[in-house]
Length: 205
Ligand code: NI
Image (tube, rainbow, N blue to C red; front, side, top):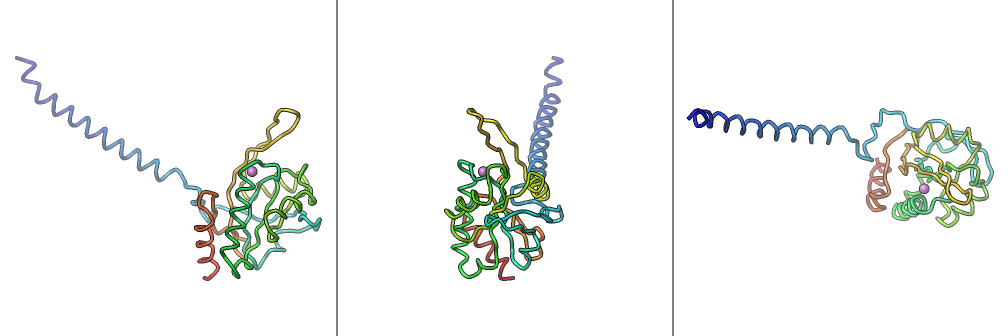
């Protein structure tokens, strides 16, 4: 008899508990959705980029001021990279094909994270395969470290069998304005159509 008396109350509590749980569950989802940044969501006010002093694929000493007045599309990688770097450079080249005459307003810049192997000559041979537009930059360890730090690029060297090494690295394409300031960033999976359309819009305004 006692149990039957409390049954409606228990049911009400159970329903309330389920409703609260569902509410918290959804709230949790929303929080996660707002906290995790998408690859295209780096806040413009976070300082990305800045001065660099490096050497191009022709052996000429250059710095970021040499590219003022043009947009810079900056990508960090290394010529021994088996997949992500060559794919990214191909996508960047496809973007420039799609831009047509507007492409002249943008310099695609590939900065190596592997200055030990990526000499200017090595960079030149490598980049020639991706068309004539690319600027390839290398430098001393300290110069590369400083440039990567300025662009908040993550990379980590790994030893592989046979005394060789490779890198884990972030594969973000940075778009810098003609004043050298960060505008936005692109990722490989956005594809050349999207990137070219976004870039064309920015170049017009
Ligand atoms: Ni790579």
